[in-house]
Length: 342
Image 1: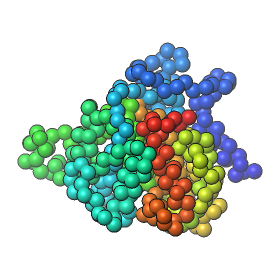
Image 2 (image 1 turned 135 degrees about the vertical axis):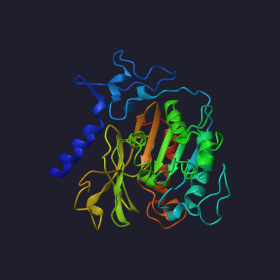
Image 3 (image 1 turned 90 degrees about the horizontal axis):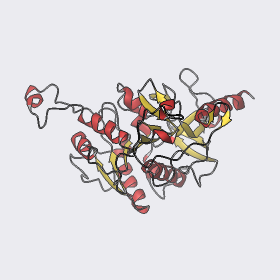
Image 4 (image 1 turned 120 degrees about the vertical axis):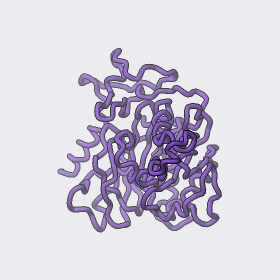
């Protein structure tokens, strides 16, 4: 009974935008033209303004802001690490756009390129912070950017701040926050964001990014182990998935804990051999995927994706095809190719 009560309470919180004044409320469709994001005309988007992150945030599509109307069916994949690096994105890539990928490694990069090609979406990739800033700049027509197991201060132009000669150079040294600005403006213009696995171990000290993750951030994880993923909501990104499926991961614990999001999937903690028994273990309701509108754009994120075999078609990894479907549909939804977070 206690477990069921906790689940219902969390799910009710996730659907808090669906009730207004005690009456059933149907969310409007996403705006098709740019409108003020702080309108208080009832029921205006100011109803969803988050004072913590100073943005319109949540599951209400009125937070969407389509400034750019000529986006193409392409996404940008970013895997730069400024700290620990997962084996499934090794080795580090050369600078520029679309550097050479290893024939047998760079498993995540090659998988996402191939998976999205199957559904008619072009993927460009980079680990160059300058290239990211340029690609997401004011004229960007990407539909989404994907952060896959990035880490730490991935958007910082390392080395520049301590080099006086570079700092004086307006071409290479100015605007150390150019990538942060570009990402923020990309979202404000109606872009999509997809965060996979250690995207949660990224930009710890930038509140805007924490909000982009759903008011959530990585705290720790237990051992890499088997568990059962549960789909907890009907959504375009979970269509066709079984209610429960086996998987293996590190099952990230999060602090802060996501709020004002639509929870899509959880891990059944009773299926884990070893559970975190002290703070911040999440107890009965442990989310692993969710979505939200954020500062004008769409954000779809999952903590899953630690192992290379999960990204390897034909592998014996449990529910590899289900994981592939979740990732592909999550990206398509963040792009707006299929309904988002409905």
